[in-house]
Image (cartoon, rainbow, N blue to C red; front, side, top):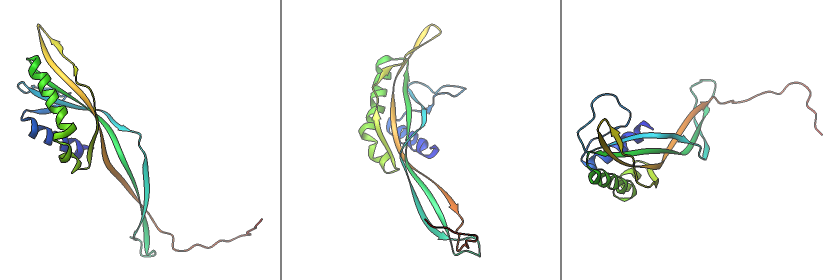
Length: 168
């Protein structure tokens, strides 16, 4: 998921031309306007498939092992916020970022096996900071990304049954 997040941030930053930073970070904030992101649902339960692939064995007593690969279309949800001291600027940046996920950046993301499957409504997320307001507009985007996990299972070349075998 780290690589998918980095690909999203890189593409969004290139399109927007403003900083795109993690939401929950300590330290100094960038100058306005800027975007923040946070993965709010790191993994949703999804369908998967198992594929058995014969591979050369690492054990000299066997000719083949099996690599069992679990392939899935991982779903996760990313929250994106646009920050400014100006309400119109914040709203416009949020709309532009949502458009990037829906259309402008779609092919860039698809080329990296990342598919935005639902871009939510843009909502007002303004907050008061001391005696002023920080204008925030944001949305959540649900994303599907290819993922696979593999494990090696050592092969069994032959076996011998001992004892009494009965049949019905």
